[in-house]
Length: 242
Image (cartoon, rainbow, N blue to C red; front, side, top):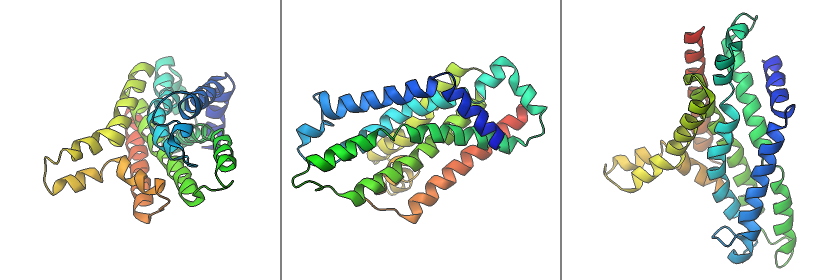
């Protein structure tokens, strides 16, 4: 697994793809938070808070994570190296988990530049330091867990696809449905009491607790379950290709 993890990380950082993605992610969030005239602009909100950042980032991750994960298995199959991997003395589960960890790690690294935003908001607060650190750190933990869930979904999409374009489109679609689609469907209240159950199937409600600074065991367990299910399914579909 560690050999696969090192190989994948080198493939991201060795050809600049990870650096470009991290830079693009940071540039987009900077523009929305400090320059563009929109609801996420920190200066227009007038509060020492990164709440708008934590609202914006999941939408960007919905496109970034599938871009990172699309090549994990789809590219291997497209280039024929998947059969070579099958011939190596490693378990399919190690292969899946190693690739999952690599996507998760690069996704987390996308958040590192945002510490500059945290420092900026901390200093600009009146008085300095007037920021809800509990809510902020809870939101960061929520984002790290959400990235893991998106990574699992992206790996599953790549294991189902024959090429990288299909893997990317399927990954974006699945992440969108899980984060926003289910939540939006439940908001129409078409199913009566079952809407609450439907609402809790999606990512949004469980991520929302973290953005309030609440780290609930139920929310953590939900995301762990989602990650486990996506990795088990990925393992199953890769095994079928063996």
